[in-house]
Length: 228
Image (cartoon, rainbow, N blue to C red; front, side, top):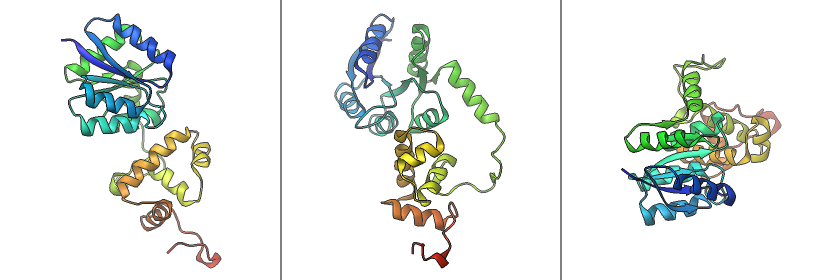
């Protein structure tokens, strides 16, 4: 079976190189390429490909949000992430958004073919590096102070709760990015996710939510700095 693929990457040279490589591989037909997440969504709606090879860090609509929308709006199309980044703040949001595969850009042709074939047959298409990280994550001991009997509200992840606590401290997105040593775009993704999960509309509501659920401690009311 030939896999019909759309490639999404904002770097023209990289995108064209991926398209050229895929054109040489057996069982793969590239039907379109996109320079950002919005264009990828348009091509998926128009072409109904089997797979989107999705970069993560793109303008207008990043790869995590594009993955979420593809999976929600076009369930017949599967997403395989193809990115430079294999850190936890890139990997786990993409998998939670619905990606069925995750490769880094140092993957060779055989690895790409195996991932595509795996996803086409209903399996996961994960690089060995990603498989190792998932295994490590499963076997990691809980973080100090973590309460396994007390899950976070509304399905928040520990990282989303951490970002929310920093929002409650009054930090901006760039300040949160520096504090956590992650990209500003990743902070924005976490904030968008936690806003959606908690049904808050703005940062003030997010702060109240954090205080109410014990994710952040309210400031000393004697100072007059509190939110009602």
